[in-house]
Image (cartoon, rainbow over all chains, first blue to last red; front, top):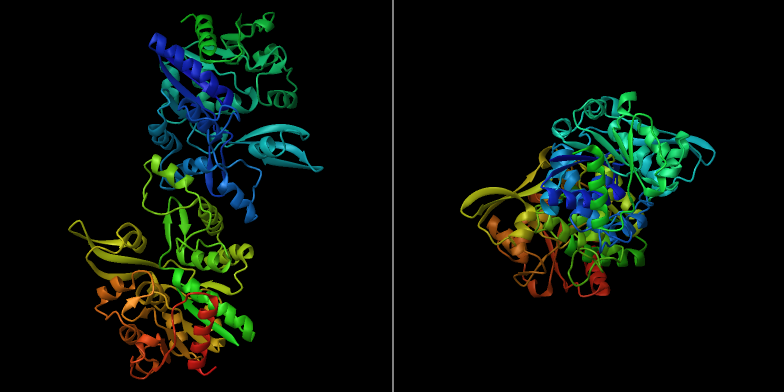
Length: 317
Length: 317
């Protein structure tokens, strides 16, 4: 069996741990198509937060308490940059992380596409799944927001990390998405998949930027594999992160039903065949979509693997 | 009074501490024209060992025991790069240093010339002297040497750090020197100087690459200020570093006389008016050059400042 997962960073990485565990049991291959909208160049370093979260988590090197970055991280480079007055100073640039970014940036500068760079980094981390960036092209999520009374378009990282999303926010723009091509292997993986899963990542700024790549969306929406989304909202609250702020900006209800309707039924121009919600949300109804309830708290690998089994069951595979 | 010092890194930095101390006493201004031949790009970072040694030393942040880099340095980035298998792994890239290189590389990438980048970095370090790179253009010292039986041209850093200069060595090449222009302010500083000092740096790979910039050599050799060299050889041995290996490659005797003759008298196409040697080398004779002996061990700031006073005395200023 071939499983493709469209995913963001932290929550998606945790979900992928369960996907990998279940896939090992049933002998399935997993391809993770990872959001690059969060990617940003800072201090000359190309930083890919979601790719790194997935890579570190699956590689057993993520910090489980902080939720992002490396376990045992140190912060000398960041402190020194601040002493030079180098901006941005609000970004959490760890020393171990810096080495990852140096290797990545050096390879990108030498002309390697991000997908090949990611494969090279994964030689160290052995994530046990094939990790593909959604695109090798520039695709950045920018946020139109009011900053100190002035309407500005800022990078998603600035909105998220610097302002914690707590500024009047008008919309999200996926810069470059219209002309971006799916990274090599992405469309092929989706076409060959037995099931496509949408991780319980932020629908607005993690999954949407992936689906904003036209050929990628086309491959998912018109592909042969059933598409099963896993709700990132449990009983009216996001499992983690700031999905509520993002959904609020779009005027979407912060509920399993709201997010399910945002993704939409495949038959109605959306992408979903099935929508897996938490047992607390078992009344959810999305027209044209098979809805199933299962416990969705990813408390450990086994519970997460059971979620994945439920999703595959919903897909009928 | 205006003092210009042509200098390399570690030894030159120590000399400059004495120059600065003496200059403060007599109310003089100091401009250091610093070698860039050691500069190298590694892991995407533009590294300027001599500029950094001078900046850190005069800024009070150099490691006095190791002789290079920052006091209290840590090595997380270097260890992580090695775990990725990223080459070169033999270069001592500290975490604090990495921040300096990130700031520099970001500014260079944004289009600022090295001289302006250096000035920006010095806003933090307040070295108390004007620091100018010899040139803003690419000028790299390469070394033609036999590596595992094969004749190769390798970067000076590889020859020095990786091989400790202990390979059969044929010559040094200052790549880019012929077309390099002096950095803004260098020729002006030399023209306005009351005295030009050659620090007791390595004559072959620290001072020679500076003088390999044609207009800079011209400004020194034909300028109004007396030029006083300070011998880096005391009683037949280099004060520090590997000047002996470098001189041997050129067939130059490792002695105060040998180095003095290498620089040569201004009247004979060289640059020297005066040559300050150690008291153990008081028999040194360089045709056309005034030779004076003084204690040249730079054991502390006061002794080094006394050396500088002797050099100015020799210059007659």
